[in-house]
Image (cartoon, rainbow over all chains, first blue to last red; front, side):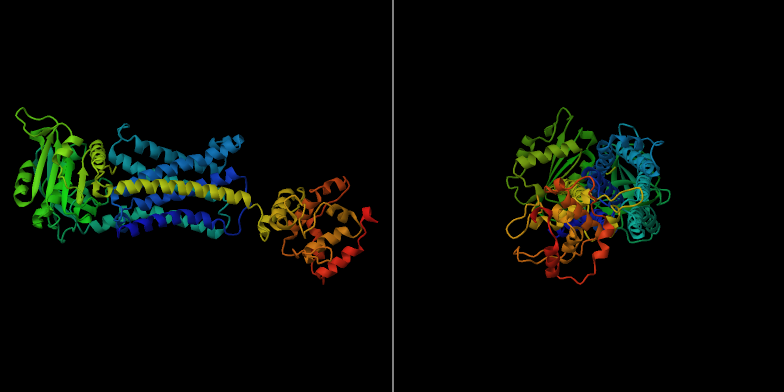
Length: 438
Length: 182
């Protein structure tokens, strides 16, 4: 519960930050009021703008901000709040035009004034951001290109929105009000400098070297990294880091991966990566000796955060990687608590780490249940999907104080969560890693 | 659990912000006039080519300053007089100045149990607008004709700064002869 206080604090601060610049405009001298819908739409515009600016702070991976929630939740906030902000910002001109249709000419870049043109640029940039983010996969946008455009369009949107506010000038009608608005926008957008310049500069002194690239089953490769002249990285089991391979730490090309090694070893970390996409398919060709940078640790999907008398890990495919970190850490700590692992995958030949798991069973109170979608002919174990029946069959009768960790494809996680809730497992004991950080 | 709480937080934030925008819109549209806000009031001031815009100002000013005693329709109640005969006073000799004095210095009389408090804190523009509002409402408008010249803001200033008590105002009231009641 001690995470509750910072958790609520940051949300309160967020609301204060979004409300403050608007409140400041109500300090004298204030322009005279106009009809309700016009003013409400102006309110929406201002709230939308600050909310977009706050996004730059959200994604800057400040640890004190992300820690209470976990960075996947922060990115969920980022997606949802940004969509709300964009919707609000679409309503801002919409209401103004509906209020008086003769204002339609403001939407014509040739028809309006500079204030309306800046607003138009900003809004188009935001709509482009929304479209490329929601439909990135359908548009087949390369992840790195999308990332760069996302950042640039975001900056364009805030800068032009700020110009719109200054040029319209109704509320920012004196020096200090202007200064507060411009200062706020600059400060928030500046947070991106922390992420893209300051942090990488610090990472330059904390490089890592690839010492081994190990083939696992199921098209998965384990990348072993060792620190170059620094003590390494203290992380909690189940956390992850953004990995930048080769090149400078200032690159935009970085990918988040869970540590799969024991958290007891700071000086030798492993990432297990399944070849699923453009970048992950190149892991097998990474030469030993390659320099890398890590931004981490991040994430709230860890057993240390949720002490319990025993754990249930439910993994789908490569979702096993954080569980490997859990179990290696527990083995290194000689942790006696019981663990049940439900591990779903396509076929027996492709089940990554199954030999390693057999070894872990000697060191831990660990029971492993494999669930295969395409089992071999002589398969005696479970097959198909992780269904409520299967869960009922294998879960211990006593579920009260166990904690559940689920990681895998989103539909699987949803289905398992629903089934667990129906079985009477309390929501606060179910933990999921939504590894959709893009 | 984290994701579940996060969803609740998102909905809360969305609802909060939309209500805040509505509140902003309401606040900004309803606070047309702040009585001690000269900058706002100056927008209504008469200027070459643009007459004194007192209608909205007067309505809001009446609501803010007068209606709790004289009632929303100027009907008065108990110890507070109706405002349906203000135009008669206005049209009588000396009445135009008297009405301004009543507002600047208040009125205490034997006729009404409650005194009229002085309203000298009102800006000239707002006071003028309120006077014009009363003169054109509550039945007063029927007593006026096309030739009537309503108040202009510059009439207020010269009447400020007199040594006048609420009783003194009542004395001036006694000197005014109403046309209908001779």
